[in-house]
Each structure stands twice: as C-alpha cells, then as structure tokens.
Length: 286
Image (cartoon, rainbow, N blue to C red):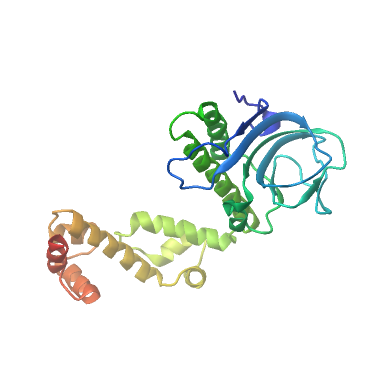
C-alpha cells in the first residue's frame, strides 16, 4: 500500500509491476495500458532502448539531480519530474544511484505518442493533490484486475494522469500575462453579477484598470464588447428559464436585470425575431 513522505512529493511506492496487456476490456474508451509499475528506490538502468511508450513520474532520487541522456541529448532536471519515453529512444543514466517512480506503458500502436506535445520529454513536476489521488487510485485498482471493468478504470485513470501532466506543464510553460489574468477574474465576476446594473469605470478600478486600459485589454482577450458579453449572459439565462420553467415573462425580465417587462420583450424580439412567449411555445412544442 502507498504511504506518504515529504521527500517524495507525498508518495512512497512498494515495488510492484502489473501486466495488463492480455486482460479484457469492456468499454474500450481509452488507450489500453499494457503495464503499470511503481518502485521505491530502484537502481538506475545505465542504458536501454525504449520499446513502448512509457509515462514515468520520478518522485525521488539519489543523487537529487541525476543527469539523463536521451538519444545523446542531456537533461538535468531534479525530481519530482516526468519523463515521456518514446519508442526507439535510447535512454542513458551515466551515474549510479536509485529512484522512486510510478509509470505506465502503452503499446506502440496505441496512438498515445501522437497525442503528446513533441517537446514534452523531461520536465520538472509539481505533484498536486489531484495528481497524487489519481496515482494512488491507479495503483490501488491494480490489486483487483480480475474484477469486472477494473482494467477499463485503470485505462481511464492513467489517461487522466497523462492529461493532467500535459495540462499542468502547458499552464506552467505558457503563463497568462498579468492583465490576461485580471480579465479572467473580471469574466468570473460578471458570471455572478450579470443581472446587476454595472458601472464599468468602477469595475475597471476594482481590478486595477483605468476604464480605457480595461477596454483595451478586454479587446485583446475577447471577441465581443463588455456590454455585448453581458447581453449574451442575460439572454442565455432567459432562454433557459423560458424553456425549463413556468416563470412569468415579467419574473424572467426581473431576474436578468431588465427594469421593465416591456424593455425585455422588445430586446428579446430584436435579438430573436419573436417574442419571449412565442419562443417558449415553440420550444415546448418540439
């Protein structure tokens, strides 16, 4: 069973390898994992050629920054780190030592290599709680591979780990500019306050912009104006309430921030070409 340790990014593994390639899947939604392993302080293999696609998360090593040669190119990345080992590559560790790792393997014809960014080879890694839970779930599932559907769940879990790795590394390598982050925060705020009357100058100041700079940065990140964005949010909500509720038209108008039912009806008719009531009747007849 896995235990936790601050030295290894939260995970210690008991040595174990599970062969999965010959086992039957039920759903076949995800690429099949043919092998899954986890080792505590296994010795480095000096040199080998990779035969299958392997996703390897190395959590702890001695020495702490073991040099790695992949097809002759040197990588000096401390653990925790992730290695994407592709078919045909030659991997060398020119020093002695040991490593704690978790890995899973796909067959060459799985198509996984085509999904991976070509520049993702060896990279430092932050083992988040979510990633740690996925790893723990995958290793725990290996204890019951004879149960109905377990191999499918392992495939899903490993694919989720792979997706989490790709996403987290992409975010780290392509951080949003500070202004882009502020615009994202404003979008989140608007999602919760779209029915209110918004003073755009005050909103800009609240997030550290002048009104002019806010509009400039908004245009760099969005395809519509702030006012049009609010209108889209309001009418998306109106559509849902017209189709999924028995609220009166006047109640819907009030909920999405219109001062009068008449102004809502006029705005709705201008946008959709029909009245809110006609929209509701047409939807309910479908």
